[in-house]
Length: 218
Image (cartoon, rainbow, N blue to C red; front, side, top):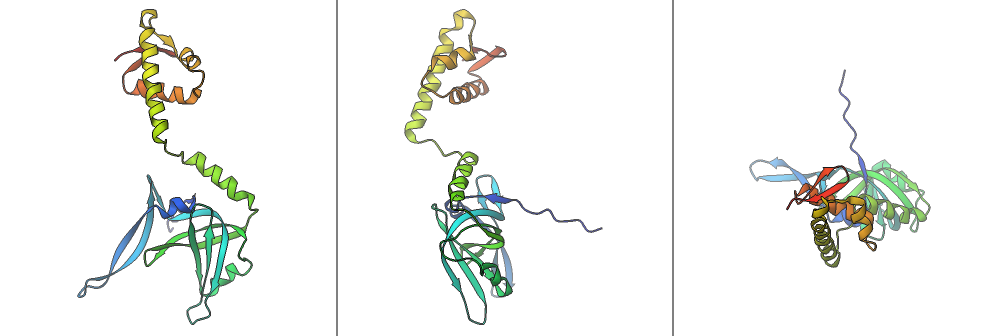
């Protein structure tokens, strides 16, 4: 019985993030004597992920169809973060027949590259309500938190120092409850305080003699 190949995950992604990714190619020899090679895209690297298939929601801002011998069609997609083309060839140009400039679409497809330009070879394409552009943006922001700004990093370092100081001051009480630390910082989000406490515990600066009780280790 033939082993069925596992289908690659179609990652939900913004076009701008995709364009900033690193393209990884397989160099296939064409002519050993001239040492010419053909580049075949293996995947693109984004963080710790290797993307082969993608799931994109975007607006169509341009449509093109070639009437030459080599038949192909393309849609230029824009989701507000960047632009990328979706391309089909031969008989597959019928996939674009019902789509026009201004449509909002969901495209699931394979990543391909031609002359170092990344594009999508669609497996599925369907119209969407334009509101889903915002829905997708918010969805991805939850999946990929934005890096902290320089000012926010300074604030987090200051918070770290204040947490350490508050625990140190409680040593003559044999520690302090984590809930009390959170209540102490009224203007700081509880999840950020818990995040910093967790890091300090992992770094061995603080320790928990019992669950929820924090002491200074140094």
